[in-house]
Image 1: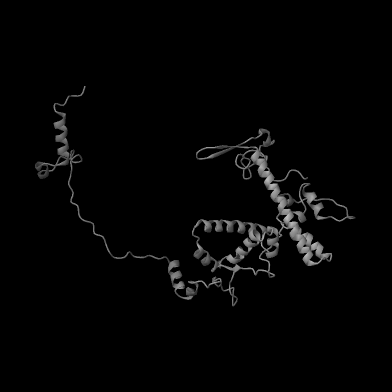
Image 2 (image 1 turned 180 degrees about the horizontal axis):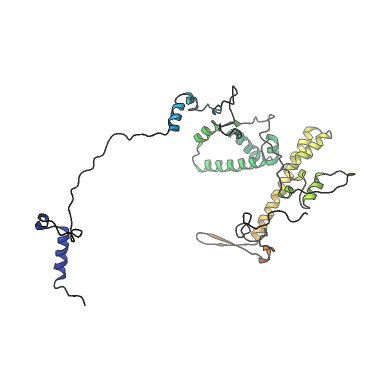
Length: 344
Protein backbone atom coordinates (compact mmCIF):
# COMPACT_ATOMS: atom_id res chain seq x y z
CA UNK A 1 0.00 0.00 0.00
CA UNK A 2 1.57 3.32 -1.04
CA UNK A 3 2.24 5.92 1.68
CA UNK A 4 -0.37 8.61 2.19
CA UNK A 5 0.37 12.27 1.60
CA UNK A 6 -0.73 14.48 4.44
CA UNK A 7 -1.69 17.56 2.33
CA UNK A 8 -1.85 16.63 -1.39
CA UNK A 9 -3.11 20.02 -2.52
CA UNK A 10 -0.27 21.90 -0.90
CA UNK A 11 2.27 19.38 -2.12
CA UNK A 12 0.97 19.53 -5.69
CA UNK A 13 0.92 23.30 -5.65
CA UNK A 14 4.40 23.40 -4.21
CA UNK A 15 5.67 21.00 -6.85
CA UNK A 16 3.95 22.95 -9.64
CA UNK A 17 5.39 26.20 -8.38
CA UNK A 18 8.83 24.62 -8.14
CA UNK A 19 8.60 23.41 -11.74
CA UNK A 20 7.27 26.67 -13.15
CA UNK A 21 8.74 29.49 -11.09
CA UNK A 22 12.31 28.89 -9.98
CA UNK A 23 13.35 30.16 -6.60
CA UNK A 24 16.19 32.56 -5.92
CA UNK A 25 18.34 29.79 -4.54
CA UNK A 26 17.86 27.69 -7.65
CA UNK A 27 18.86 30.64 -9.80
CA UNK A 28 21.97 31.32 -7.80
CA UNK A 29 23.21 27.77 -7.46
CA UNK A 30 23.20 25.20 -10.29
CA UNK A 31 20.76 22.31 -9.85
CA UNK A 32 21.95 18.75 -9.42
CA UNK A 33 22.75 16.83 -12.54
CA UNK A 34 20.00 14.23 -12.02
CA UNK A 35 17.29 16.88 -11.48
CA UNK A 36 18.28 19.33 -14.21
CA UNK A 37 16.01 17.72 -16.78
CA UNK A 38 12.94 18.11 -14.54
CA UNK A 39 13.43 21.78 -13.70
CA UNK A 40 12.40 24.74 -15.82
CA UNK A 41 15.33 26.49 -17.46
CA UNK A 42 14.48 29.93 -18.85
CA UNK A 43 15.91 30.86 -22.20
CA UNK A 44 16.36 34.25 -23.75
CA UNK A 45 14.16 34.94 -26.81
CA UNK A 46 15.47 37.10 -29.60
CA UNK A 47 13.34 38.63 -32.34
CA UNK A 48 13.72 37.01 -35.77
CA UNK A 49 15.12 39.22 -38.48
CA UNK A 50 13.33 38.98 -41.83
CA UNK A 51 15.09 40.02 -44.99
CA UNK A 52 13.30 42.33 -47.42
CA UNK A 53 15.61 41.60 -50.36
CA UNK A 54 14.32 39.47 -53.24
CA UNK A 55 15.28 35.80 -53.27
CA UNK A 56 17.87 34.67 -55.75
CA UNK A 57 16.20 33.24 -58.85
CA UNK A 58 17.91 30.09 -60.04
CA UNK A 59 17.12 29.12 -63.62
CA UNK A 60 18.23 25.95 -65.29
CA UNK A 61 20.26 26.01 -68.47
CA UNK A 62 17.26 25.06 -70.61
CA UNK A 63 15.17 27.81 -69.04
CA UNK A 64 17.89 30.39 -69.63
CA UNK A 65 18.18 29.30 -73.26
CA UNK A 66 14.40 29.48 -73.67
CA UNK A 67 14.27 33.02 -72.25
CA UNK A 68 17.06 34.02 -74.57
CA UNK A 69 15.24 32.52 -77.56
CA UNK A 70 11.80 33.96 -76.71
CA UNK A 71 13.33 37.42 -76.36
CA UNK A 72 15.19 37.03 -79.65
CA UNK A 73 14.25 34.92 -82.65
CA UNK A 74 11.16 33.48 -80.96
CA UNK A 75 9.55 36.83 -80.23
CA UNK A 76 7.27 36.39 -83.27
CA UNK A 77 5.56 33.47 -81.52
CA UNK A 78 4.47 35.46 -78.47
CA UNK A 79 1.23 36.58 -80.10
CA UNK A 80 -0.82 34.49 -82.51
CA UNK A 81 -2.10 35.75 -85.83
CA UNK A 82 -5.85 36.10 -85.80
CA UNK A 83 -7.50 33.49 -88.00
CA UNK A 84 -4.19 31.76 -88.78
CA UNK A 85 -1.91 29.30 -87.07
CA UNK A 86 1.42 30.46 -85.74
CA UNK A 87 3.37 27.23 -85.37
CA UNK A 88 7.14 26.97 -85.02
CA UNK A 89 9.10 26.54 -88.21
CA UNK A 90 11.71 23.78 -88.42
CA UNK A 91 14.72 23.49 -90.64
CA UNK A 92 12.95 20.82 -92.68
CA UNK A 93 10.17 23.23 -93.65
CA UNK A 94 12.39 25.46 -95.72
CA UNK A 95 10.41 28.28 -97.29
CA UNK A 96 7.11 26.44 -96.83
CA UNK A 97 5.00 27.80 -93.96
CA UNK A 98 4.08 25.35 -91.22
CA UNK A 99 0.30 25.51 -90.86
CA UNK A 100 -0.71 22.12 -89.44
CA UNK A 101 2.13 20.75 -87.29
CA UNK A 102 2.10 22.29 -83.78
CA UNK A 103 4.81 20.00 -82.38
CA UNK A 104 8.17 20.24 -84.18
CA UNK A 105 9.48 16.97 -82.73
CA UNK A 106 6.39 15.04 -83.81
CA UNK A 107 5.91 15.65 -87.55
CA UNK A 108 3.35 12.83 -87.84
CA UNK A 109 0.81 14.75 -85.74
CA UNK A 110 -1.15 17.26 -87.79
CA UNK A 111 -3.83 19.55 -86.43
CA UNK A 112 -7.08 19.17 -88.34
CA UNK A 113 -9.39 22.15 -88.89
CA UNK A 114 -12.47 22.53 -86.72
CA UNK A 115 -15.89 23.91 -87.60
CA UNK A 116 -16.41 27.56 -86.71
CA UNK A 117 -19.45 28.84 -84.86
CA UNK A 118 -21.29 29.87 -88.04
CA UNK A 119 -20.94 26.36 -89.47
CA UNK A 120 -22.29 24.82 -86.29
CA UNK A 121 -25.19 27.27 -86.27
CA UNK A 122 -25.96 26.35 -89.88
CA UNK A 123 -26.02 22.63 -89.03
CA UNK A 124 -28.35 23.25 -86.08
CA UNK A 125 -30.66 25.39 -88.24
CA UNK A 126 -30.92 22.74 -90.96
CA UNK A 127 -31.77 19.97 -88.51
CA UNK A 128 -33.92 21.72 -85.91
CA UNK A 129 -35.63 24.51 -87.88
CA UNK A 130 -35.71 23.24 -91.47
CA UNK A 131 -36.49 19.69 -90.38
CA UNK A 132 -33.86 18.01 -92.56
CA UNK A 133 -32.61 14.54 -91.70
CA UNK A 134 -29.27 14.18 -89.94
CA UNK A 135 -27.99 11.92 -92.71
CA UNK A 136 -29.04 14.43 -95.36
CA UNK A 137 -27.18 17.26 -93.63
CA UNK A 138 -24.15 15.01 -93.18
CA UNK A 139 -24.11 14.10 -96.88
CA UNK A 140 -24.72 17.68 -98.04
CA UNK A 141 -21.98 19.34 -95.98
CA UNK A 142 -19.57 16.41 -95.83
CA UNK A 143 -19.60 16.18 -92.01
CA UNK A 144 -19.61 12.88 -90.16
CA UNK A 145 -23.05 11.87 -88.93
CA UNK A 146 -21.81 11.56 -85.35
CA UNK A 147 -20.37 15.07 -85.46
CA UNK A 148 -23.65 16.45 -86.80
CA UNK A 149 -25.59 14.80 -83.96
CA UNK A 150 -23.09 16.08 -81.37
CA UNK A 151 -23.29 19.65 -82.73
CA UNK A 152 -27.08 19.61 -82.58
CA UNK A 153 -27.07 18.35 -78.99
CA UNK A 154 -24.51 20.91 -77.83
CA UNK A 155 -26.33 23.73 -79.61
CA UNK A 156 -29.53 22.73 -77.86
CA UNK A 157 -27.74 22.91 -74.50
CA UNK A 158 -26.24 26.29 -75.41
CA UNK A 159 -29.59 27.79 -76.40
CA UNK A 160 -31.20 26.38 -73.26
CA UNK A 161 -28.55 28.11 -71.15
CA UNK A 162 -29.14 31.39 -72.98
CA UNK A 163 -32.87 31.08 -72.33
CA UNK A 164 -32.19 30.51 -68.62
CA UNK A 165 -29.87 33.52 -68.43
CA UNK A 166 -26.65 31.56 -67.93
CA UNK A 167 -23.64 33.50 -69.17
CA UNK A 168 -21.58 31.79 -71.87
CA UNK A 169 -17.79 31.93 -72.27
CA UNK A 170 -17.93 33.56 -75.69
CA UNK A 171 -14.57 35.41 -75.38
CA UNK A 172 -12.84 32.13 -74.59
CA UNK A 173 -14.46 30.47 -77.61
CA UNK A 174 -13.41 33.27 -79.92
CA UNK A 175 -9.85 33.17 -78.57
CA UNK A 176 -9.53 29.42 -79.12
CA UNK A 177 -11.05 29.50 -82.61
CA UNK A 178 -8.69 32.31 -83.59
CA UNK A 179 -5.64 30.16 -82.83
CA UNK A 180 -6.60 26.95 -84.63
CA UNK A 181 -7.47 26.26 -88.27
CA UNK A 182 -11.22 26.54 -88.86
CA UNK A 183 -13.65 25.69 -91.65
CA UNK A 184 -16.95 27.23 -92.59
CA UNK A 185 -19.77 26.60 -95.06
CA UNK A 186 -21.54 28.81 -97.54
CA UNK A 187 -25.29 28.44 -97.36
CA UNK A 188 -27.14 27.38 -100.54
CA UNK A 189 -23.84 26.80 -102.33
CA UNK A 190 -21.70 23.78 -103.14
CA UNK A 191 -19.11 23.24 -100.39
CA UNK A 192 -16.08 21.00 -100.27
CA UNK A 193 -16.45 18.00 -97.92
CA UNK A 194 -15.21 18.65 -94.42
CA UNK A 195 -14.22 15.02 -93.77
CA UNK A 196 -14.86 11.50 -94.94
CA UNK A 197 -18.40 10.48 -94.01
CA UNK A 198 -18.77 6.92 -95.34
CA UNK A 199 -15.78 5.09 -93.89
CA UNK A 200 -16.31 1.41 -93.17
CA UNK A 201 -15.41 0.57 -89.59
CA UNK A 202 -13.63 -2.72 -89.10
CA UNK A 203 -15.84 -5.29 -87.42
CA UNK A 204 -14.16 -7.68 -84.96
CA UNK A 205 -15.55 -10.65 -86.90
CA UNK A 206 -13.75 -9.47 -90.04
CA UNK A 207 -10.28 -9.41 -88.48
CA UNK A 208 -9.70 -13.16 -88.78
CA UNK A 209 -7.65 -14.65 -91.59
CA UNK A 210 -9.54 -17.50 -93.20
CA UNK A 211 -9.26 -19.53 -96.41
CA UNK A 212 -12.63 -19.89 -98.08
CA UNK A 213 -12.94 -22.08 -101.19
CA UNK A 214 -15.23 -20.66 -103.89
CA UNK A 215 -16.19 -21.49 -107.43
CA UNK A 216 -14.50 -19.65 -110.28
CA UNK A 217 -17.66 -19.71 -112.38
CA UNK A 218 -19.56 -17.23 -110.17
CA UNK A 219 -18.93 -13.78 -108.80
CA UNK A 220 -17.76 -13.52 -105.20
CA UNK A 221 -19.67 -10.49 -103.87
CA UNK A 222 -19.40 -8.47 -100.68
CA UNK A 223 -22.36 -10.38 -99.28
CA UNK A 224 -20.48 -13.65 -99.86
CA UNK A 225 -17.42 -12.21 -98.11
CA UNK A 226 -19.50 -11.18 -95.10
CA UNK A 227 -21.12 -14.62 -94.96
CA UNK A 228 -17.69 -16.23 -95.04
CA UNK A 229 -16.68 -14.39 -91.87
CA UNK A 230 -19.99 -14.89 -90.05
CA UNK A 231 -23.53 -15.71 -91.08
CA UNK A 232 -24.86 -12.70 -89.14
CA UNK A 233 -22.33 -10.19 -90.50
CA UNK A 234 -23.84 -7.65 -92.88
CA UNK A 235 -22.07 -6.80 -96.15
CA UNK A 236 -20.04 -3.62 -96.46
CA UNK A 237 -22.76 -1.89 -98.51
CA UNK A 238 -25.11 -2.09 -95.51
CA UNK A 239 -22.61 -1.46 -92.70
CA UNK A 240 -21.45 1.96 -93.92
CA UNK A 241 -22.99 5.00 -92.22
CA UNK A 242 -24.70 6.11 -95.48
CA UNK A 243 -25.89 3.09 -97.45
CA UNK A 244 -28.36 5.38 -99.24
CA UNK A 245 -25.46 7.18 -100.92
CA UNK A 246 -24.41 3.93 -102.61
CA UNK A 247 -27.90 3.48 -104.01
CA UNK A 248 -27.90 7.09 -105.24
CA UNK A 249 -24.58 6.60 -107.04
CA UNK A 250 -25.96 3.49 -108.71
CA UNK A 251 -28.96 5.45 -109.93
CA UNK A 252 -26.68 8.17 -111.29
CA UNK A 253 -24.66 5.58 -113.17
CA UNK A 254 -27.88 4.31 -114.72
CA UNK A 255 -28.59 7.77 -116.16
CA UNK A 256 -31.04 9.18 -113.64
CA UNK A 257 -31.03 13.01 -113.29
CA UNK A 258 -29.04 14.25 -110.29
CA UNK A 259 -31.95 16.25 -108.87
CA UNK A 260 -34.27 13.25 -108.88
CA UNK A 261 -31.58 11.04 -107.35
CA UNK A 262 -30.97 13.63 -104.60
CA UNK A 263 -34.67 13.84 -103.79
CA UNK A 264 -34.90 10.07 -103.62
CA UNK A 265 -31.90 10.05 -101.29
CA UNK A 266 -33.48 12.60 -98.94
CA UNK A 267 -36.70 10.62 -98.83
CA UNK A 268 -34.80 7.38 -98.13
CA UNK A 269 -32.82 8.88 -95.25
CA UNK A 270 -35.99 10.33 -93.71
CA UNK A 271 -37.60 6.91 -93.80
CA UNK A 272 -34.52 5.21 -92.32
CA UNK A 273 -34.27 7.74 -89.49
CA UNK A 274 -37.99 7.36 -88.81
CA UNK A 275 -37.62 3.60 -88.53
CA UNK A 276 -34.60 4.00 -86.24
CA UNK A 277 -36.54 6.41 -84.00
CA UNK A 278 -39.47 3.99 -83.82
CA UNK A 279 -37.15 1.15 -82.86
CA UNK A 280 -35.54 3.19 -80.10
CA UNK A 281 -38.96 4.26 -78.80
CA UNK A 282 -40.20 0.66 -78.78
CA UNK A 283 -37.05 -0.45 -76.97
CA UNK A 284 -37.49 2.25 -74.35
CA UNK A 285 -41.14 1.31 -73.83
CA UNK A 286 -40.21 -2.35 -73.43
CA UNK A 287 -37.54 -1.50 -70.85
CA UNK A 288 -40.02 0.72 -69.00
CA UNK A 289 -42.57 -2.08 -68.96
CA UNK A 290 -40.27 -4.36 -66.98
CA UNK A 291 -38.99 -1.61 -64.67
CA UNK A 292 -40.49 -0.85 -61.28
CA UNK A 293 -39.87 2.65 -59.96
CA UNK A 294 -39.92 3.53 -56.27
CA UNK A 295 -39.87 7.25 -55.47
CA UNK A 296 -38.46 8.59 -52.22
CA UNK A 297 -37.78 12.07 -50.89
CA UNK A 298 -34.28 12.12 -52.37
CA UNK A 299 -33.86 9.25 -54.82
CA UNK A 300 -35.69 7.13 -57.33
CA UNK A 301 -34.97 3.41 -57.19
CA UNK A 302 -35.46 1.28 -60.30
CA UNK A 303 -35.85 -2.49 -60.12
CA UNK A 304 -35.82 -4.89 -63.06
CA UNK A 305 -36.69 -8.56 -63.29
CA UNK A 306 -33.73 -10.76 -64.23
CA UNK A 307 -33.18 -14.38 -65.06
CA UNK A 308 -30.19 -16.06 -63.50
CA UNK A 309 -29.93 -18.43 -66.48
CA UNK A 310 -29.04 -15.55 -68.81
CA UNK A 311 -25.40 -15.58 -67.71
CA UNK A 312 -24.58 -18.37 -70.17
CA UNK A 313 -22.24 -21.33 -69.73
CA UNK A 314 -19.22 -19.11 -68.99
CA UNK A 315 -20.99 -16.36 -67.05
CA UNK A 316 -20.09 -13.72 -69.64
CA UNK A 317 -23.27 -13.49 -71.70
CA UNK A 318 -24.17 -10.00 -72.86
CA UNK A 319 -27.68 -10.30 -71.43
CA UNK A 320 -26.38 -11.12 -67.97
CA UNK A 321 -26.48 -8.57 -65.16
CA UNK A 322 -23.16 -6.83 -64.73
CA UNK A 323 -21.50 -8.48 -67.71
CA UNK A 324 -19.23 -5.46 -68.05
CA UNK A 325 -18.20 -5.08 -64.44
CA UNK A 326 -19.00 -8.35 -62.67
CA UNK A 327 -16.89 -10.75 -64.76
CA UNK A 328 -13.15 -10.05 -64.93
CA UNK A 329 -11.14 -10.38 -68.12
CA UNK A 330 -8.14 -12.68 -68.26
CA UNK A 331 -6.53 -11.20 -71.37
CA UNK A 332 -3.25 -10.49 -69.60
CA UNK A 333 -3.18 -13.54 -67.36
CA UNK A 334 -0.61 -16.23 -67.87
CA UNK A 335 -1.60 -19.61 -69.16
CA UNK A 336 -4.67 -18.35 -71.03
CA UNK A 337 -5.28 -19.40 -74.64
CA UNK A 338 -5.35 -16.20 -76.70
CA UNK A 339 -5.42 -17.64 -80.23
CA UNK A 340 -8.54 -18.85 -82.05
CA UNK A 341 -9.13 -22.55 -81.49
CA UNK A 342 -11.82 -22.99 -84.14
CA UNK A 343 -12.63 -21.72 -87.63
CA UNK A 344 -16.25 -20.99 -88.56
